[in-house]
Image 1 (tube, rainbow, N blue to C red):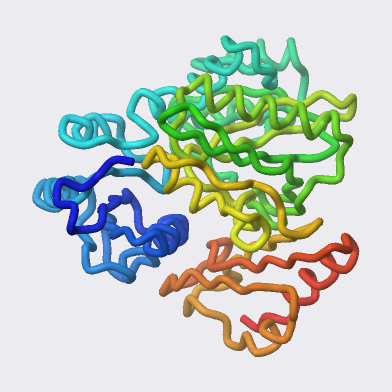
Image 2 (image 1 turned 120 degrees about the horizontal axis):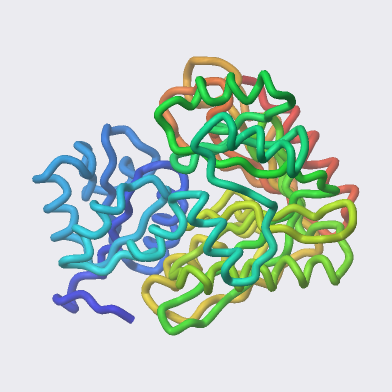
Length: 382
């Protein structure tokens, strides 16, 4: 374990970002007797509200970032969009996990895909795009439809566009003018699955069950654990996820998203170098959550059990439906469901599609778990 210089003071973990993922990481850190420092641009953030060590001017503010670095014994992140130059600056005085070298292989999705392909990990066909002719050439090889993605800063469907014909090619170039883009073949999949992987500094790995993820408007809506797939598919997904994290020398916790195709192939879609929506269920569903193992991993502690406590779990995201207050009008009925836990993130403002919380239902009967989760979700009054 990496110790604080003053052994009478608990180790302080610095987190870049103050959203719900940082909040859930913080809860596990506090439970282990640690302190947490948060840096984010703006106050009243879910994680920032929980600590006195809250730096609200963001990591581009020299005084705040320097004080944040000084007070933190080790640093991690809750999103993949922090500039590499900032990560490298932090590394001049403190360890940060995932490292800047790892993030260089992840932030740019084209480089990410090249890294995985070069490590013999199956991915959809893709190409760098720099011209309209390049789009036409891609379509000639792989056909329509296909997907255009911005190489950086894309998430929850932002930065993506489906290309159905030649006219869409020109529209896409105009839409993403000035941004680096890539094309990716359209995968006709049977299911989308994900695997959470924790990996510590010593190389110890903890792999969570393969889960099914169900998207709505390109945002994760529901997660069912474990995925209803053959054992061979589940094992293949776990193997791909572990290889993907090793290929980027990832330290921390990672969400690996994959497609299961109609002919039973498993293709890696993307990797998230942080806790992931597909792993929220682990808080109630597993003996050691993705968040606790994320803390353990960066401190080089033994990793906890990823075994599920019950046979099944279902997580449903609570997404904002309108602009307005950040909490539902009424959660009374939610609390009546015996096998379901409610998580609200304490975001002050809601907007359509914004992740405001989640619910998780656990149990030993598949149909009952899914029904209770849906009934609970539908009982919330926004």
